[in-house]
Image 1 (spheres, rainbow over the protein chains, first blue to last red):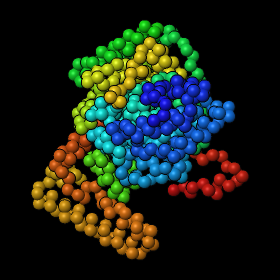
Image 2: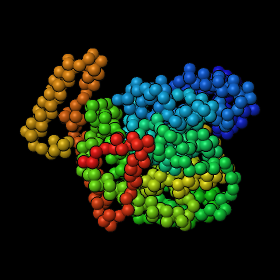
Image 3: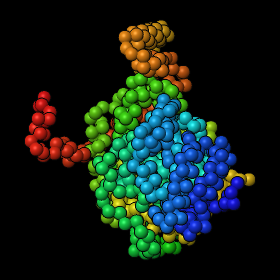
Image 4: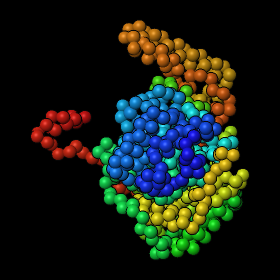
Length: 469
Length: 116
């Protein structure tokens, strides 16, 4: 074991990069220490689909040599990370969490992987995920080629999904940061359950070229990390237009922290009804977070989202797009190899959906967008709980354990809104609890500033799971 | 199809299973013929996917069938909600269609799809 302590591996990217830049931390030594920690703990967590030690050390040596020559690329230079196993990596299997894709290899990197390589980040490996990012549904945590994602706070509990390995690896200190994707909840859910900070950018903010398609019009790529500041650094490296992805936005993004107070911002406080579902401890933690934001100067006003069947329209569009993108696996029968017992029947289950239904959902999506534009004329952001309960046990039926609606998730993903997931305490069984701040498209700087501000006043993002004990 | 199988009388269920088994055999026969007629790599590919049968051609466990019914009911409720939502006829288009870009060096016209 190197002289790098375990506590160093749980530092934020901001702290790691400051030490690397000052040459107090060598990328090769840091990478070796992460690989050692992965070796010790990954069998407990199922965080990695594949570790790439040779590539990691090669990239770390290159980073170290460059930094020693005085060529510092930026804050991710020499920082080890993991990529969700739906981002293509040239020559390294990319299995989308699904048995039918075992051994699948692409010949070029996804844009996100390439951009992180160009920023000098070190790829430790591919992170486990729910099969097909949950595009064909899943009922149990074990719906993955890697087995269930185990939560570092309690390995008998789930990490959340579909970016399960990203959540576990960041919380467990197996990587400096991770990449994930969200169609509906796949960044925010593991962030909440694992007690980490996740960022879902606006639709189109980050290129999806080379990433598995779950739903063309819902998929977003974003970071999972140990602080809002870290998410800012990673987003800065991966965002931007891309000729390989026509949906990637060319809108300029000024991510530099404005270090501003929340004064002058007005938030809509959207409460969820915990009287019949969810856990009261989560509501209490959320109330404390609201108190902190108010104390920081954010004006918060109780508000309700416009009455609209957003969940139904999101469900119809995502399902139709997912059934189309994964059609091949129905055609060749390999859908039966998936772990979820109901995935093979999704074509049949959704047989009643017509083309007219899909077009109607699309037309309603335009109405929802107009209604939310009006809503955001009164508010800068929405503050609301993330999940209403803590991470369920691994073997639990997720249909029952998470049997509550997600109105803000439906609206946020339906409209392509950015959101930040922030840890705000602990609930039952001392499992992490989180909340979210959502903004209109392009609100990334505001959300990150508010995240920074909240985390300057709290220490939940610095809490570490008892993995070593 | 799964719901029909589950709710049908026993004799009908047996009949559907026979049909399903027959279709598996037919597919297997077709793949063997294709394999024989094609090159070796293709034959290997055919053998590598013996599960190339429709999902509903195998008997469905009772619990799974019940859950499929639940999910179908959920889809039906969601579709009813969408269908009941009032929208004016011919409201604004929700997504954009991009026509072909302007012709460059006179070659685009030759590639333009024929009207159907």
